[in-house]
Length: 183
Image (cartoon, rainbow, N blue to C red; front, side, top):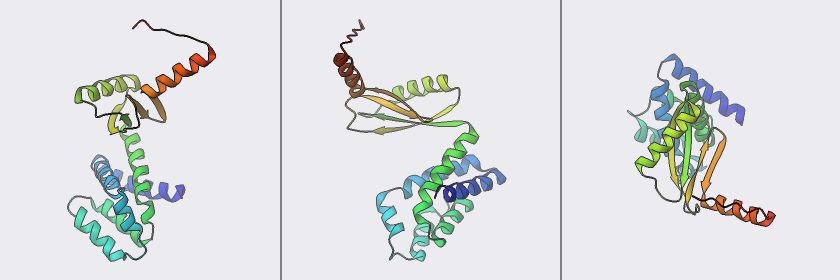
């Protein structure tokens, strides 16, 4: 599956480069991936009794005038080849490759509650300084995070959650190591 996903993503990347539309196509791919990634839409696309013409109609109604011919062509091709289940993975792969070519790193910040714009800007500044690259921050709220936040960036996790700090303290106490900070 990974090879098929990479092939489609690379073909779309080549088309974007040829047309000098990489940045525009990247924005559109993110929009499409997020829209088609919804569980209701996935259920519709993968349902065995929904005809290809109904799927084309969905794409045309939602995306005509919004998407480039390359992206619309990809969606139609994936349906024609019975590869609807690969649309979101292909777009995800495309987005990752396009971001790399543009020197952009995606950072996912997961917090217990919504972050303020000032907090997001501060995180952005720190990550940009640390990586030396353009950072695109995606924020997500997860009620399972007790407090604080963690960042997923470029295959690394920076964990500043209360749960992790409590677990670290618990392990230290088990080992008999006591560390007190004056701050």
